[in-house]
Image (cartoon, rainbow, N blue to C red):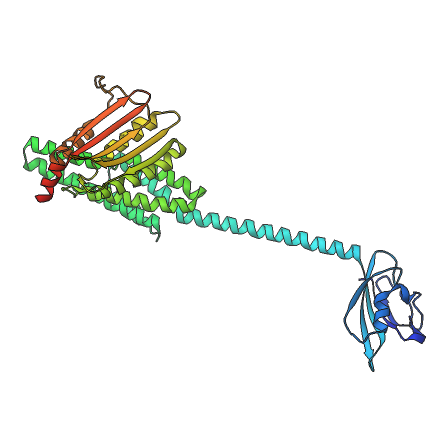
Length: 402
């Protein structure tokens, strides 16, 4: 602000200084006159002809200060006429600099606040998501080495978050206890039954447990840990789906009768959802489900889907598509798992690759004994593989009657 003044506006004393205080101390004294032409100041002229007491502004042209200035006027009304005016003059350059400095200061404070909020948010995400996932992953890695159920249950107990990760840790604890129970049960049966019966039981348990491979769990948890930082919403959804997947595998250990295909399909979708997190654009999943009105042994289709992912699409450099379809013919129901992966020679002799092939043999056996079904596999190198599970309607009807 440059100056504050009180000036008379009566016609015979127009411009008379009643009071003035200037910033630089050069103001006029009381009784002196401002040298100005009221015709050049329409705001002041309008005030002499009006009874409005509104504050008005105009650009100052040599009055009362030189330079790029603006003045604000407040009329003083006495007996219905404007007698005097209170004026304030300020330099526009000073005001502009002050506003700019205020804006810059506000931006700096706001940016600092945003950075602080982001740091707090990152710390919160780390404490509630990333750190628990790391603990779960490390516990699973240790469990793959020593199979110490008590220790992994203790580690999961430490993760007391009341969210999807807490639900996942509870599921892993239950799964470890169930596996420990079945290990002990296998030992008890081995002591009570003959060798052949023991081997058959252990083979069936091996098929079930193979569906919950520690390596698959490790890969799934690693993918979820990455998503916690990149996409917390997807990580939360994946955690729930993975926990339900583990629960489904645990339930399969107790299931001895066929289940509706729709239940098996839901479990397959959870498995492919988790694998999609890992392979991303290298794995595409398609479904062509035309019927679900039949039953299959629980987790009997999953080994075929896993082969399509791991040994078909997963071995192809640019990935591919796994498709699950179902249809009904006059005499049977069919489940078809196809991929456009690397394929193989179905007539080639089996190689000693160091991997156990008990899983597929037991899958064929369970399908045959429980549903009278058979598996037909066709493949062509470079084009992909198709596995057809054919379930005769006659056998399905006999199971229903039983």
